[in-house]
Image (cartoon, rainbow, N blue to C red; front, top):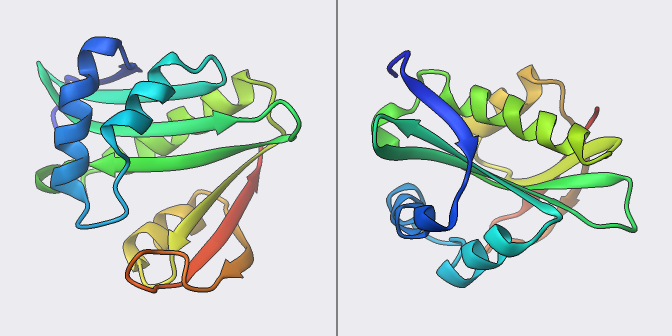
Length: 150
């Protein structure tokens, strides 16, 4: 990853690149174009993008409901060609800061129970397992629910 990779708030003009990134990163359980468009308009959502020059190479989506002290990390995506270079950890740290800025007391997420890479990142970042959701994903996989106090 280049030192010139920056993380910034997403803009409406990023929509096509966000959808393309989602398609490069995930085989299923993708965020739809409609969901990204809604997140861009939602004042209770923080949508972050990582830019390597003019190329969108990562994203993170944090949602906050007014009736919950916890924010939810809805998605983190890193371009497959840049994985293993620390961009996921940077996006996670920025997502946590966005959740703090929204007044959240904690950040929660769901992750496939077999996704060892993501589980290692979240564990290293201070997340603990608070539950399991059977058959959460379209392929029938279980999810682990994780949480980190902010």
